[in-house]
Length: 310
Length: 256
Image (tube, rainbow over all chains, first blue to last red; front, side, top):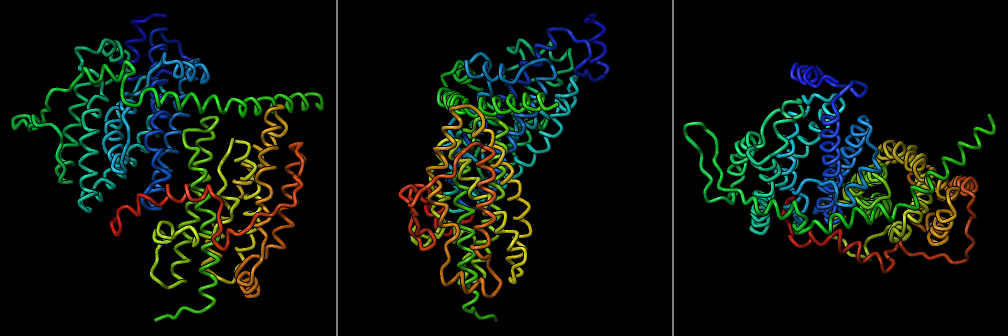
Protein backbone atom coordinates (compact mmCIF):
# COMPACT_ATOMS: atom_id res chain seq x y z
CA UNK A 1 0.00 0.00 0.00
CA UNK A 2 1.48 3.30 -1.08
CA UNK A 3 0.59 5.54 1.84
CA UNK A 4 1.72 8.70 0.10
CA UNK A 5 -0.50 8.01 -2.88
CA UNK A 6 -3.39 7.27 -0.50
CA UNK A 7 -2.89 10.53 1.35
CA UNK A 8 -2.73 12.39 -1.96
CA UNK A 9 -5.92 10.68 -3.07
CA UNK A 10 -7.94 11.61 0.04
CA UNK A 11 -6.53 15.14 -0.03
CA UNK A 12 -7.97 15.42 -3.53
CA UNK A 13 -11.43 14.83 -2.05
CA UNK A 14 -11.68 11.37 -3.59
CA UNK A 15 -13.94 9.12 -1.46
CA UNK A 16 -12.60 5.83 -0.12
CA UNK A 17 -15.06 2.93 -0.44
CA UNK A 18 -15.18 -0.35 1.54
CA UNK A 19 -13.36 -2.52 -1.04
CA UNK A 20 -10.63 0.02 -1.72
CA UNK A 21 -7.16 -0.50 -0.40
CA UNK A 22 -6.42 1.64 2.64
CA UNK A 23 -3.62 1.88 5.20
CA UNK A 24 -4.17 -0.18 8.36
CA UNK A 25 -3.83 2.93 10.46
CA UNK A 26 -6.59 4.64 8.48
CA UNK A 27 -8.87 1.64 8.93
CA UNK A 28 -8.14 1.39 12.66
CA UNK A 29 -8.64 5.10 13.23
CA UNK A 30 -11.96 5.07 11.44
CA UNK A 31 -13.26 1.94 13.16
CA UNK A 32 -12.41 3.47 16.52
CA UNK A 33 -13.96 6.82 15.69
CA UNK A 34 -17.14 5.39 14.14
CA UNK A 35 -17.56 2.87 16.96
CA UNK A 36 -17.16 5.55 19.61
CA UNK A 37 -19.65 7.67 17.77
CA UNK A 38 -22.09 4.73 17.67
CA UNK A 39 -21.53 4.05 21.38
CA UNK A 40 -22.28 7.72 22.11
CA UNK A 41 -25.58 7.45 20.28
CA UNK A 42 -26.76 4.44 22.24
CA UNK A 43 -25.51 5.60 25.64
CA UNK A 44 -26.99 8.99 24.78
CA UNK A 45 -30.44 7.39 24.72
CA UNK A 46 -30.33 7.03 28.50
CA UNK A 47 -30.36 10.56 29.95
CA UNK A 48 -33.23 11.65 27.70
CA UNK A 49 -34.91 8.26 27.62
CA UNK A 50 -35.31 8.57 31.37
CA UNK A 51 -37.70 11.48 30.79
CA UNK A 52 -39.99 9.87 28.22
CA UNK A 53 -42.37 8.46 30.80
CA UNK A 54 -42.49 11.81 32.63
CA UNK A 55 -42.71 14.25 29.69
CA UNK A 56 -45.07 17.09 30.68
CA UNK A 57 -47.33 17.04 27.60
CA UNK A 58 -48.28 14.39 25.06
CA UNK A 59 -46.74 16.47 22.27
CA UNK A 60 -43.41 16.69 24.10
CA UNK A 61 -43.60 13.00 24.87
CA UNK A 62 -44.08 12.12 21.19
CA UNK A 63 -41.19 14.41 20.17
CA UNK A 64 -38.93 12.81 22.76
CA UNK A 65 -39.86 9.24 21.82
CA UNK A 66 -39.07 10.06 18.18
CA UNK A 67 -35.76 11.61 19.18
CA UNK A 68 -34.62 8.68 21.29
CA UNK A 69 -35.71 6.36 18.50
CA UNK A 70 -33.57 8.39 16.07
CA UNK A 71 -30.59 7.91 18.37
CA UNK A 72 -31.04 4.14 18.29
CA UNK A 73 -31.29 4.41 14.50
CA UNK A 74 -28.08 6.47 14.35
CA UNK A 75 -26.37 3.81 16.44
CA UNK A 76 -27.50 1.22 13.90
CA UNK A 77 -26.22 3.10 10.83
CA UNK A 78 -22.92 3.81 12.52
CA UNK A 79 -22.31 0.21 13.61
CA UNK A 80 -23.14 -0.76 10.03
CA UNK A 81 -20.65 1.79 8.72
CA UNK A 82 -18.01 0.28 11.04
CA UNK A 83 -18.90 -3.19 9.74
CA UNK A 84 -18.04 -2.06 6.19
CA UNK A 85 -14.48 -1.76 7.52
CA UNK A 86 -14.47 -5.36 8.73
CA UNK A 87 -15.49 -4.67 12.34
CA UNK A 88 -18.20 -6.73 14.04
CA UNK A 89 -21.01 -5.10 16.01
CA UNK A 90 -20.90 -7.65 18.83
CA UNK A 91 -17.17 -7.15 19.24
CA UNK A 92 -17.55 -3.39 19.27
CA UNK A 93 -20.30 -3.64 21.90
CA UNK A 94 -18.03 -5.86 23.93
CA UNK A 95 -15.33 -3.18 23.78
CA UNK A 96 -17.88 -0.67 25.07
CA UNK A 97 -19.18 -2.97 27.79
CA UNK A 98 -15.70 -3.74 29.07
CA UNK A 99 -14.65 -0.08 29.05
CA UNK A 100 -12.03 -0.54 26.32
CA UNK A 101 -13.79 1.90 24.02
CA UNK A 102 -15.26 5.21 25.12
CA UNK A 103 -18.28 7.27 24.31
CA UNK A 104 -18.77 11.01 24.54
CA UNK A 105 -18.14 12.30 28.08
CA UNK A 106 -21.27 14.47 27.85
CA UNK A 107 -23.55 11.53 28.55
CA UNK A 108 -21.97 10.96 31.96
CA UNK A 109 -23.81 13.96 33.35
CA UNK A 110 -27.23 13.49 34.93
CA UNK A 111 -30.43 14.87 33.38
CA UNK A 112 -32.24 15.82 36.56
CA UNK A 113 -35.00 18.14 35.32
CA UNK A 114 -37.23 18.42 32.28
CA UNK A 115 -35.20 21.46 31.19
CA UNK A 116 -32.19 19.19 30.86
CA UNK A 117 -34.00 17.42 28.02
CA UNK A 118 -34.41 20.78 26.30
CA UNK A 119 -30.80 21.76 27.05
CA UNK A 120 -29.50 18.47 25.68
CA UNK A 121 -31.37 19.06 22.43
CA UNK A 122 -30.25 22.65 22.15
CA UNK A 123 -26.63 22.38 23.32
CA UNK A 124 -25.58 18.75 22.96
CA UNK A 125 -27.23 18.20 19.60
CA UNK A 126 -26.08 21.69 18.64
CA UNK A 127 -22.47 20.82 19.44
CA UNK A 128 -22.84 17.44 17.75
CA UNK A 129 -23.97 19.12 14.52
CA UNK A 130 -20.98 21.46 14.52
CA UNK A 131 -18.73 18.44 15.03
CA UNK A 132 -20.48 16.27 12.48
CA UNK A 133 -21.33 18.50 9.54
CA UNK A 134 -17.67 18.42 8.40
CA UNK A 135 -17.83 14.61 8.64
CA UNK A 136 -20.32 14.59 5.77
CA UNK A 137 -17.20 15.36 3.68
CA UNK A 138 -15.09 12.74 5.43
CA UNK A 139 -12.84 10.74 3.09
CA UNK A 140 -14.54 7.43 3.96
CA UNK A 141 -17.73 7.15 1.88
CA UNK A 142 -20.04 5.07 4.09
CA UNK A 143 -19.28 7.23 7.15
CA UNK A 144 -19.77 10.44 5.19
CA UNK A 145 -23.10 9.24 3.83
CA UNK A 146 -24.33 8.08 7.25
CA UNK A 147 -23.45 11.52 8.57
CA UNK A 148 -25.58 13.27 5.95
CA UNK A 149 -28.70 11.60 7.27
CA UNK A 150 -27.68 11.85 10.91
CA UNK A 151 -26.95 15.59 10.61
CA UNK A 152 -30.39 16.25 9.15
CA UNK A 153 -32.02 14.54 12.11
CA UNK A 154 -29.71 16.16 14.65
CA UNK A 155 -30.53 19.55 13.27
CA UNK A 156 -34.22 18.81 13.75
CA UNK A 157 -33.48 17.76 17.35
CA UNK A 158 -31.49 20.92 17.98
CA UNK A 159 -34.36 23.12 16.81
CA UNK A 160 -36.84 21.19 18.95
CA UNK A 161 -34.54 21.51 21.97
CA UNK A 162 -34.17 25.24 21.46
CA UNK A 163 -37.91 25.64 21.06
CA UNK A 164 -38.58 23.65 24.25
CA UNK A 165 -36.02 25.81 26.06
CA UNK A 166 -37.67 28.98 24.71
CA UNK A 167 -41.03 27.90 26.14
CA UNK A 168 -39.44 27.30 29.56
CA UNK A 169 -37.48 30.55 29.46
CA UNK A 170 -40.68 32.47 28.75
CA UNK A 171 -42.69 30.44 31.28
CA UNK A 172 -43.39 30.57 35.00
CA UNK A 173 -40.67 31.54 37.49
CA UNK A 174 -40.19 27.85 38.29
CA UNK A 175 -39.80 26.96 34.60
CA UNK A 176 -37.39 29.85 34.09
CA UNK A 177 -35.30 28.71 36.99
CA UNK A 178 -35.32 25.17 35.60
CA UNK A 179 -34.10 26.51 32.23
CA UNK A 180 -31.28 28.59 33.73
CA UNK A 181 -30.11 25.74 35.94
CA UNK A 182 -30.04 23.39 32.96
CA UNK A 183 -27.90 25.87 31.01
CA UNK A 184 -25.63 26.16 34.07
CA UNK A 185 -25.24 22.38 34.15
CA UNK A 186 -24.74 21.71 30.44
CA UNK A 187 -22.77 24.69 29.14
CA UNK A 188 -19.26 23.66 30.13
CA UNK A 189 -19.71 19.94 29.42
CA UNK A 190 -21.03 20.91 25.96
CA UNK A 191 -17.86 22.95 25.28
CA UNK A 192 -15.79 19.93 26.31
CA UNK A 193 -17.53 17.81 23.67
CA UNK A 194 -15.12 19.17 21.07
CA UNK A 195 -12.22 17.56 22.87
CA UNK A 196 -9.01 18.99 24.23
CA UNK A 197 -7.32 21.98 22.72
CA UNK A 198 -5.44 21.10 19.51
CA UNK A 199 -2.06 21.38 21.14
CA UNK A 200 -3.10 18.53 23.47
CA UNK A 201 -4.91 16.40 20.91
CA UNK A 202 -2.44 13.76 19.70
CA UNK A 203 -4.47 12.21 16.86
CA UNK A 204 -5.70 15.37 15.20
CA UNK A 205 -2.86 15.94 12.71
CA UNK A 206 -2.98 12.43 11.23
CA UNK A 207 -6.79 12.49 10.99
CA UNK A 208 -6.57 15.81 9.16
CA UNK A 209 -4.03 14.40 6.70
CA UNK A 210 -6.35 11.47 6.03
CA UNK A 211 -9.34 13.68 5.40
CA UNK A 212 -11.22 12.21 8.36
CA UNK A 213 -11.09 15.46 10.23
CA UNK A 214 -11.47 18.83 8.50
CA UNK A 215 -11.26 21.39 11.28
CA UNK A 216 -9.43 21.56 14.59
CA UNK A 217 -11.19 21.02 17.93
CA UNK A 218 -10.72 24.67 18.84
CA UNK A 219 -12.08 25.93 15.52
CA UNK A 220 -15.21 23.82 15.93
CA UNK A 221 -15.66 24.86 19.55
CA UNK A 222 -15.40 28.51 18.53
CA UNK A 223 -18.00 27.99 15.85
CA UNK A 224 -20.38 26.51 18.46
CA UNK A 225 -19.78 29.30 20.95
CA UNK A 226 -20.35 31.97 18.31
CA UNK A 227 -23.64 30.37 17.28
CA UNK A 228 -24.91 29.60 20.77
CA UNK A 229 -24.15 32.66 22.90
CA UNK A 230 -26.55 34.89 20.93
CA UNK A 231 -29.20 32.17 21.26
CA UNK A 232 -28.81 32.20 25.06
CA UNK A 233 -29.11 35.98 25.00
CA UNK A 234 -32.24 35.73 22.89
CA UNK A 235 -33.72 33.38 25.49
CA UNK A 236 -32.81 35.81 28.28
CA UNK A 237 -30.61 33.19 29.93
CA UNK A 238 -27.16 33.82 31.36
CA UNK A 239 -24.21 31.78 30.06
CA UNK A 240 -22.43 30.61 33.23
CA UNK A 241 -19.07 32.14 32.34
CA UNK A 242 -18.12 35.46 33.99
CA UNK A 243 -15.19 35.82 31.57
CA UNK A 244 -17.25 35.49 28.41
CA UNK A 245 -16.55 38.49 26.13
CA UNK A 246 -17.22 39.41 22.55
CA UNK A 247 -14.00 40.30 20.78
CA UNK A 248 -15.00 43.44 18.88
CA UNK A 249 -12.19 43.11 16.36
CA UNK A 250 -12.90 39.56 15.22
CA UNK A 251 -16.56 39.30 16.22
CA UNK A 252 -15.83 36.04 18.04
CA UNK A 253 -16.90 35.29 21.60
CA UNK A 254 -14.03 34.46 23.93
CA UNK A 255 -14.87 32.07 26.75
CA UNK A 256 -13.13 31.71 30.09
CA UNK A 257 -10.80 28.83 30.81
CA UNK A 258 -12.31 25.37 30.34
CA UNK A 259 -11.65 23.13 33.34
CA UNK A 260 -9.86 20.31 31.57
CA UNK A 261 -9.27 18.50 34.84
CA UNK A 262 -13.02 17.88 34.99
CA UNK A 263 -12.90 16.49 31.45
CA UNK A 264 -10.04 14.19 32.45
CA UNK A 265 -11.96 13.01 35.50
CA UNK A 266 -15.05 12.13 33.46
CA UNK A 267 -12.93 10.55 30.73
CA UNK A 268 -11.19 8.41 33.35
CA UNK A 269 -14.57 7.05 34.41
CA UNK A 270 -15.23 9.18 37.46
CA UNK A 271 -18.00 11.45 36.16
CA UNK A 272 -21.34 11.54 37.97
CA UNK A 273 -22.95 8.83 35.81
CA UNK A 274 -20.17 6.80 34.17
CA UNK A 275 -20.84 3.73 36.28
CA UNK A 276 -24.60 3.97 36.02
CA UNK A 277 -24.67 4.46 32.24
CA UNK A 278 -22.39 1.53 31.54
CA UNK A 279 -24.12 -0.71 34.08
CA UNK A 280 -27.49 -0.07 32.49
CA UNK A 281 -26.13 -0.78 28.99
CA UNK A 282 -24.52 -4.02 30.15
CA UNK A 283 -27.67 -5.05 32.03
CA UNK A 284 -29.84 -4.47 28.94
CA UNK A 285 -27.44 -6.54 26.86
CA UNK A 286 -27.20 -9.34 29.40
CA UNK A 287 -30.94 -9.42 30.11
CA UNK A 288 -31.57 -9.66 26.38
CA UNK A 289 -29.12 -12.50 25.81
CA UNK A 290 -31.79 -15.19 25.91
CA UNK A 291 -33.85 -13.28 23.33
CA UNK A 292 -30.96 -12.98 20.88
CA UNK A 293 -30.11 -16.64 21.42
CA UNK A 294 -33.72 -17.62 20.72
CA UNK A 295 -33.75 -15.62 17.48
CA UNK A 296 -30.49 -17.24 16.39
CA UNK A 297 -31.71 -20.75 17.33
CA UNK A 298 -34.98 -20.21 15.46
CA UNK A 299 -33.18 -18.93 12.36
CA UNK A 300 -30.76 -21.89 12.40
CA UNK A 301 -33.54 -24.42 12.89
CA UNK A 302 -35.57 -23.04 10.02
CA UNK A 303 -32.58 -22.61 7.71
CA UNK A 304 -31.81 -26.30 8.31
CA UNK A 305 -35.44 -27.27 7.66
CA UNK A 306 -35.44 -25.27 4.40
CA UNK A 307 -32.18 -26.92 3.33
CA UNK A 308 -33.69 -30.38 3.92
CA UNK A 309 -36.83 -29.44 1.99
CA UNK A 310 -34.77 -28.11 -0.94
CA UNK B 1 -73.55 26.88 19.15
CA UNK B 2 -73.67 23.10 19.34
CA UNK B 3 -75.22 21.26 22.24
CA UNK B 4 -73.76 18.10 23.64
CA UNK B 5 -76.07 15.14 23.10
CA UNK B 6 -76.16 11.80 24.87
CA UNK B 7 -74.66 10.21 21.78
CA UNK B 8 -71.78 12.67 21.98
CA UNK B 9 -71.17 11.66 25.57
CA UNK B 10 -71.24 7.98 24.65
CA UNK B 11 -68.76 8.56 21.83
CA UNK B 12 -66.59 10.60 24.19
CA UNK B 13 -66.46 7.70 26.65
CA UNK B 14 -65.73 5.21 23.89
CA UNK B 15 -62.85 7.38 22.64
CA UNK B 16 -61.56 7.72 26.19
CA UNK B 17 -61.49 3.95 26.57
CA UNK B 18 -59.58 3.41 23.34
CA UNK B 19 -57.39 6.44 23.96
CA UNK B 20 -56.49 5.31 27.46
CA UNK B 21 -55.64 1.83 26.15
CA UNK B 22 -53.25 3.37 23.62
CA UNK B 23 -51.70 5.85 26.04
CA UNK B 24 -51.11 3.35 28.82
CA UNK B 25 -49.62 0.74 26.50
CA UNK B 26 -47.39 3.41 24.93
CA UNK B 27 -46.21 4.36 28.41
CA UNK B 28 -45.33 0.74 29.16
CA UNK B 29 -43.49 0.30 25.85
CA UNK B 30 -41.51 3.47 26.53
CA UNK B 31 -40.13 1.82 29.65
CA UNK B 32 -38.11 -0.37 27.27
CA UNK B 33 -36.14 2.60 25.91
CA UNK B 34 -32.42 1.77 26.15
CA UNK B 35 -33.29 -1.53 27.86
CA UNK B 36 -34.23 -3.76 24.95
CA UNK B 37 -32.43 -6.96 23.89
CA UNK B 38 -30.91 -5.40 20.77
CA UNK B 39 -30.69 -2.05 19.03
CA UNK B 40 -33.21 -3.02 16.35
CA UNK B 41 -35.74 -3.60 19.13
CA UNK B 42 -35.12 -0.19 20.66
CA UNK B 43 -36.09 1.24 17.29
CA UNK B 44 -39.08 -1.11 16.90
CA UNK B 45 -40.54 -0.77 20.40
CA UNK B 46 -40.27 3.01 20.32
CA UNK B 47 -41.90 2.94 16.91
CA UNK B 48 -44.84 1.02 18.35
CA UNK B 49 -45.00 3.45 21.26
CA UNK B 50 -45.00 6.42 18.92
CA UNK B 51 -47.87 4.99 16.87
CA UNK B 52 -49.89 4.33 20.02
CA UNK B 53 -49.15 7.77 21.37
CA UNK B 54 -50.39 9.28 18.12
CA UNK B 55 -53.59 7.22 18.35
CA UNK B 56 -54.03 8.25 21.99
CA UNK B 57 -53.65 11.94 21.14
CA UNK B 58 -56.26 11.79 18.36
CA UNK B 59 -58.69 9.79 20.49
CA UNK B 60 -58.34 11.93 23.61
CA UNK B 61 -58.70 15.08 21.54
CA UNK B 62 -61.89 13.75 19.98
CA UNK B 63 -63.16 12.66 23.40
CA UNK B 64 -62.61 16.18 24.68
CA UNK B 65 -64.45 17.73 21.74
CA UNK B 66 -67.46 15.45 22.06
CA UNK B 67 -67.60 15.83 25.81
CA UNK B 68 -67.84 19.59 25.32
CA UNK B 69 -66.22 20.60 28.61
CA UNK B 70 -63.15 22.20 27.12
CA UNK B 71 -60.70 19.46 28.06
CA UNK B 72 -57.85 18.91 25.59
CA UNK B 73 -55.60 15.85 25.20
CA UNK B 74 -53.31 16.97 28.02
CA UNK B 75 -56.12 17.75 30.45
CA UNK B 76 -57.45 14.27 29.83
CA UNK B 77 -54.09 12.50 30.00
CA UNK B 78 -52.59 14.32 32.96
CA UNK B 79 -55.43 15.59 35.13
CA UNK B 80 -57.70 12.60 35.57
CA UNK B 81 -57.36 10.53 38.72
CA UNK B 82 -57.08 6.77 38.69
CA UNK B 83 -60.82 5.96 39.00
CA UNK B 84 -61.53 8.13 35.95
CA UNK B 85 -58.98 6.44 33.70
CA UNK B 86 -60.71 3.64 31.82
CA UNK B 87 -58.07 1.53 30.06
CA UNK B 88 -58.11 -2.26 30.07
CA UNK B 89 -56.10 -3.79 32.87
CA UNK B 90 -54.22 -5.85 30.26
CA UNK B 91 -52.32 -2.80 29.00
CA UNK B 92 -51.34 -1.53 32.42
CA UNK B 93 -49.71 -4.77 33.64
CA UNK B 94 -45.99 -4.40 34.24
CA UNK B 95 -43.82 -5.35 31.28
CA UNK B 96 -42.09 -8.29 32.90
CA UNK B 97 -39.43 -9.77 30.63
CA UNK B 98 -39.34 -9.42 26.86
CA UNK B 99 -41.35 -12.64 26.50
CA UNK B 100 -44.19 -11.35 28.61
CA UNK B 101 -44.09 -8.00 26.83
CA UNK B 102 -44.41 -9.77 23.48
CA UNK B 103 -47.21 -12.02 24.78
CA UNK B 104 -49.19 -8.92 25.73
CA UNK B 105 -48.34 -7.27 22.41
CA UNK B 106 -49.77 -10.23 20.55
CA UNK B 107 -53.02 -10.23 22.55
CA UNK B 108 -53.46 -6.50 22.06
CA UNK B 109 -52.43 -6.33 18.39
CA UNK B 110 -54.55 -9.34 17.40
CA UNK B 111 -57.50 -7.38 18.83
CA UNK B 112 -56.45 -3.97 17.47
CA UNK B 113 -56.32 -5.17 13.86
CA UNK B 114 -60.00 -6.22 13.56
CA UNK B 115 -61.04 -3.37 15.88
CA UNK B 116 -59.61 -0.64 13.65
CA UNK B 117 -60.69 -2.46 10.50
CA UNK B 118 -64.26 -2.40 11.80
CA UNK B 119 -63.98 1.22 12.91
CA UNK B 120 -62.92 2.30 9.42
CA UNK B 121 -66.63 1.76 8.65
CA UNK B 122 -67.86 3.57 11.77
CA UNK B 123 -70.82 5.86 11.21
CA UNK B 124 -68.88 8.45 13.18
CA UNK B 125 -66.72 10.10 10.51
CA UNK B 126 -64.11 11.42 12.96
CA UNK B 127 -63.63 8.01 14.51
CA UNK B 128 -63.46 6.41 11.07
CA UNK B 129 -60.72 8.86 10.09
CA UNK B 130 -58.66 7.91 13.15
CA UNK B 131 -59.24 4.25 12.28
CA UNK B 132 -58.01 4.79 8.73
CA UNK B 133 -54.59 5.71 10.04
CA UNK B 134 -54.49 3.30 12.98
CA UNK B 135 -55.39 0.27 10.90
CA UNK B 136 -52.14 0.54 8.94
CA UNK B 137 -50.08 0.96 12.08
CA UNK B 138 -51.50 -1.97 14.01
CA UNK B 139 -50.96 -4.31 11.06
CA UNK B 140 -47.24 -3.80 11.67
CA UNK B 141 -47.73 -4.19 15.44
CA UNK B 142 -49.29 -7.60 14.84
CA UNK B 143 -46.48 -8.67 12.47
CA UNK B 144 -43.90 -7.58 15.01
CA UNK B 145 -45.54 -9.44 17.90
CA UNK B 146 -46.20 -12.51 15.80
CA UNK B 147 -42.63 -12.81 14.60
CA UNK B 148 -41.24 -12.51 18.12
CA UNK B 149 -43.72 -14.90 19.69
CA UNK B 150 -42.89 -17.50 17.05
CA UNK B 151 -39.14 -17.04 17.43
CA UNK B 152 -39.28 -17.15 21.21
CA UNK B 153 -41.72 -20.06 21.36
CA UNK B 154 -39.79 -22.10 18.82
CA UNK B 155 -36.33 -20.80 19.79
CA UNK B 156 -34.52 -22.25 22.79
CA UNK B 157 -35.84 -24.14 25.81
CA UNK B 158 -35.40 -21.05 27.93
CA UNK B 159 -37.20 -18.74 25.52
CA UNK B 160 -40.03 -21.24 25.13
CA UNK B 161 -40.45 -21.46 28.89
CA UNK B 162 -40.31 -17.70 29.34
CA UNK B 163 -42.78 -16.73 26.64
CA UNK B 164 -45.20 -19.47 27.71
CA UNK B 165 -45.00 -18.11 31.26
CA UNK B 166 -45.65 -14.65 29.82
CA UNK B 167 -48.81 -15.86 28.09
CA UNK B 168 -49.96 -17.69 31.22
CA UNK B 169 -49.63 -14.47 33.20
CA UNK B 170 -51.32 -12.04 30.82
CA UNK B 171 -53.94 -14.34 29.32
CA UNK B 172 -56.66 -13.90 31.98
CA UNK B 173 -56.63 -10.16 31.35
CA UNK B 174 -57.56 -10.77 27.70
CA UNK B 175 -61.20 -11.53 28.49
CA UNK B 176 -61.81 -7.90 29.30
CA UNK B 177 -61.11 -7.00 25.65
CA UNK B 178 -64.49 -8.42 24.69
CA UNK B 179 -66.79 -7.28 27.47
CA UNK B 180 -69.98 -5.51 26.48
CA UNK B 181 -71.86 -2.95 28.57
CA UNK B 182 -74.97 -0.85 27.87
CA UNK B 183 -72.92 2.04 26.48
CA UNK B 184 -71.22 -0.23 23.99
CA UNK B 185 -74.57 -1.77 23.04
CA UNK B 186 -75.97 1.66 22.24
CA UNK B 187 -72.95 2.57 20.11
CA UNK B 188 -72.98 -0.78 18.29
CA UNK B 189 -76.68 -0.24 17.48
CA UNK B 190 -75.80 3.14 15.95
CA UNK B 191 -72.94 1.68 13.93
CA UNK B 192 -70.38 3.79 15.81
CA UNK B 193 -68.50 1.10 17.77
CA UNK B 194 -67.12 -2.30 16.81
CA UNK B 195 -68.96 -5.36 18.10
CA UNK B 196 -66.67 -7.31 20.46
CA UNK B 197 -68.35 -10.61 19.60
CA UNK B 198 -67.14 -10.32 16.01
CA UNK B 199 -63.70 -9.12 17.11
CA UNK B 200 -63.31 -12.03 19.48
CA UNK B 201 -63.65 -14.63 16.73
CA UNK B 202 -60.96 -13.03 14.61
CA UNK B 203 -58.77 -12.50 17.67
CA UNK B 204 -59.07 -16.06 18.83
CA UNK B 205 -58.23 -17.44 15.37
CA UNK B 206 -55.15 -15.23 15.05
CA UNK B 207 -53.84 -15.93 18.53
CA UNK B 208 -54.37 -19.69 18.25
CA UNK B 209 -52.64 -19.79 14.89
CA UNK B 210 -49.60 -17.90 16.21
CA UNK B 211 -49.39 -19.95 19.39
CA UNK B 212 -49.53 -23.18 17.37
CA UNK B 213 -46.76 -22.02 15.07
CA UNK B 214 -44.77 -21.00 18.15
CA UNK B 215 -45.29 -24.48 19.68
CA UNK B 216 -47.00 -22.80 22.65
CA UNK B 217 -50.25 -23.79 24.31
CA UNK B 218 -53.33 -21.68 24.83
CA UNK B 219 -53.49 -21.08 28.59
CA UNK B 220 -56.49 -22.45 30.40
CA UNK B 221 -57.93 -20.40 33.18
CA UNK B 222 -61.25 -19.68 34.78
CA UNK B 223 -60.01 -16.43 36.26
CA UNK B 224 -61.35 -13.31 34.55
CA UNK B 225 -60.07 -10.15 36.16
CA UNK B 226 -62.13 -7.12 35.10
CA UNK B 227 -63.01 -3.54 35.91
CA UNK B 228 -60.68 -1.37 33.86
CA UNK B 229 -63.53 0.22 31.91
CA UNK B 230 -65.10 1.43 35.14
CA UNK B 231 -61.83 2.73 36.56
CA UNK B 232 -60.77 -0.28 38.65
CA UNK B 233 -57.06 -0.91 38.26
CA UNK B 234 -54.22 -3.13 39.37
CA UNK B 235 -51.80 -1.94 42.04
CA UNK B 236 -49.10 -1.42 39.41
CA UNK B 237 -51.22 1.25 37.74
CA UNK B 238 -50.82 3.85 40.48
CA UNK B 239 -47.08 3.97 39.88
CA UNK B 240 -47.54 4.30 36.14
CA UNK B 241 -49.99 7.16 36.56
CA UNK B 242 -47.79 8.92 39.12
CA UNK B 243 -44.84 8.84 36.73
CA UNK B 244 -46.96 9.94 33.78
CA UNK B 245 -48.65 12.83 35.55
CA UNK B 246 -46.39 14.22 38.26
CA UNK B 247 -44.44 16.80 36.26
CA UNK B 248 -47.49 18.16 34.48
CA UNK B 249 -49.39 18.42 37.75
CA UNK B 250 -46.48 20.04 39.59
CA UNK B 251 -46.80 23.17 37.44
CA UNK B 252 -50.52 23.84 37.02
CA UNK B 253 -51.63 25.91 34.07
CA UNK B 254 -48.26 26.49 32.39
CA UNK B 255 -47.28 25.75 28.77
CA UNK B 256 -44.62 23.23 27.80
